[in-house]
Length: 434
Image 1: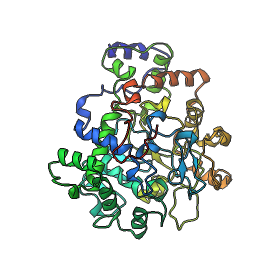
Image 2: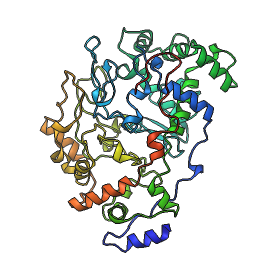
Image 3: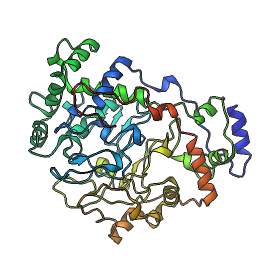
Image 4: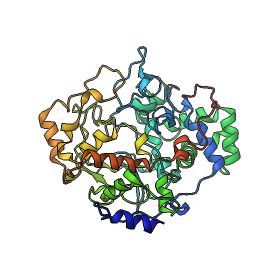
């Protein structure tokens, strides 16, 4: 069936230039332990991991919003509420927005995801796990996905809280992360002091004989198994097509021909999960606080260059997977575009992406902040556009409609709803966000 569909699409006016990917298979995923994943589910939704016990992983990665949070730039610590309804807590105001859009979590349990975050600051290579933190902070993580969890819990704006608000934020402020009294040790003790968690860790981990043995990496490994299981996405219509059990028709078929043909989408959105895991400067509009250290005063986000130091990587960001992309708005590393049509207009002509940007459409929780420093600076806009090397592709209104129809074929109802779902409660007794 797949070869027949290929022939049919290749015979259209948008002949396929890039081959279709191979069907997703079990071998593409790392093995997980379902019982450990169930423990990870509780931890993912439990605010006990945050400094002030008011934010969980699900605050910014909720199934209600396609494993994101439905806003352009999130409010982490100092926010109240969920998704677009989240607002600043008048009694504990956020210091700033999270500088980048919350990414979706689909298929992160697949082995080929060996680089994470918009700038790829953690990755697995020939020499093993690499992170911006020191080498003593890489032991014990079962996977790159597990290592990813170390960052939100250490970020004062995301989960840790600000300098003097709690024991974890104080440890982070002092730079004490590992060892007795370190931030990870404090988080692990919070969890292991809860009888249900202590019981589950000793039951499921042969290396843990009592509560005192629970470490932060044990927690992160459980969360990684949950994310890998919960949001594995390989049950879409497109997956059925690749397996020879269905076919695309109408606009979706025309959109596939564009995607793999004249629109050149598959040059970067390649492979089983529609990503080359590479970094590309696509001229995306910037706003918000930018990605800067606290002592820096600029509001830029130079993307991959912050990791590599190479000027050619300036303003380049990681190619996202397109699984369930129709349900993960807003789009871009700042969430600059709230609908796919406007994003495709900008993305197909990246040197002129700013021309398609409408600041009034951006979804930002209310906060007194200097959000438009870069957007209002003509020189900064030119700098960002000047790093684009991609050639513009003209897409008509009809062609964008067809591409979106194809992208809808990547929706996976199993992954969208989740396999375990949102728990009714968590062992800490803290509120579960719904």
